[in-house]
Length: 177
Ligand code: PRP
Ligand code: MN
Ligand code: MG
Image 1 (cartoon, helix red, strand yellow):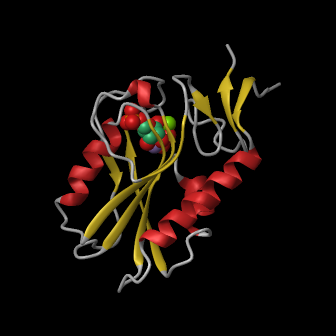
Image 2 (cartoon, rainbow, N blue to C red):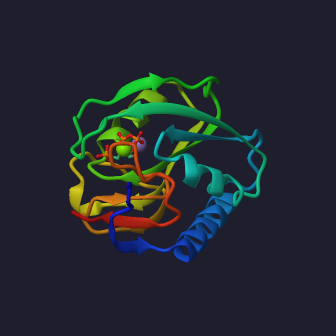
């Protein structure tokens, strides 16, 4: 039988809801009065659940798009190589863009994606990540809207996977042995 092997819950459903609400408020305040819809871009696959919750807490006209990048593949260690598996559908030139991630770990994914997005000349580019692992940083990344810092543990749930499994857990947990 398949079993869910979680040894510790790091972020509960209640903490997730509160954090997303706070982030939505910060983002709403920051972009008050923008002239065109905010472009909210989710990096698949990890951000899909956070993205769905976050956009409902942003009280502004916005559009969403997605991009699939992968650096970890099915492993637990970053390969260092960020591949665009599926690009955006829309042009972001001249637009206010918010990039959304589930977690910043080494910073490798975001630092490369930010460089690629800046080449497309957005009007502004900001980043939002639900989780941040500051201890693991090897590439410089400034997170404009950060949910919470967590210790260096391999976490799953709320979009985060281990070999593609566990993304559907409604909380963030640490995987057992
Ligand atoms: C994970 C996570 C972030 C990235 C963070 O994605 O969702 O995108 O790694 O790690 P980094 O800061 O060290 O680059 P992954 O490559 O596992 O793909 P996934 O989103 O499909 O799970
Ligand atoms: Mn990801
Ligand atoms: Mg992953």
